[in-house]
Image (cartoon, rainbow, N blue to C red):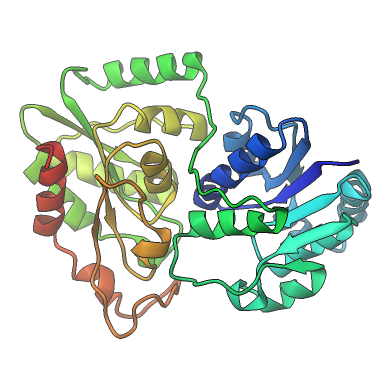
Length: 344
């Protein structure tokens, strides 16, 4: 069981991307270790393309919550517990929730690592760890925060790498989709992401439409990203008003392959932005309730639009006014995008 690690980062997709550098450092420092990662089903669509990860364990915690009184649910829970129990020397919880802390405890790992309770979203989770990281500054980027947790293993490097490889067949599939959309591969591909997990992270669609008209030049080719039915309706509305073609539904691997083809991504605080920045695709981030210094893009060429107000960094999913993100104008985003497209 020596040098066996259990990584706990269940969701969201962007946070899984933010945890990849920690996995990379762990693998580089323990090349022969057995490393497993517990993740929700959607996150597996990313982790299955991570080389040198020994095992991905899918957890259905959301389904369990919905069906807590069914016999099948409890059979699944006991099966999951028996799979992880006494199989790991180290359990490292990068999520910091009560449910992820409980998972680390159920593993019965000899060493259960977690953040200081003041650095946890749910401080009660700290009771499940037997080795806590000293309190750290929450203003640092979440990628660096995750890497700090590895100092409990005497890993003090801060090298940021994202070990993820998209298979060639998925890239070829995306190239066909782009060709069918009328894309001339000599043009700059600009992706506009209208979606986000929270209402407060979404920029108004009318702003995106106005911005698209400003960016729609001879040497640019624009596409709107969508993932849900609501976002599809917004994309259809945008198509009618701008003439920008609509993509078919893309799987997560296809979305990643598409982003890797782009010259620029414009997006709120969401998975496409985090993936693009991780793989050096230039981005313009549109930020409202979350802190761009902590959750934003990480490359020097990336740009961010953000207004700091007295209520900033509230991290609320709903807001009556949404003043912070409403203050950002299409003209501002166009200027930031132009700086990137012109190489400034």
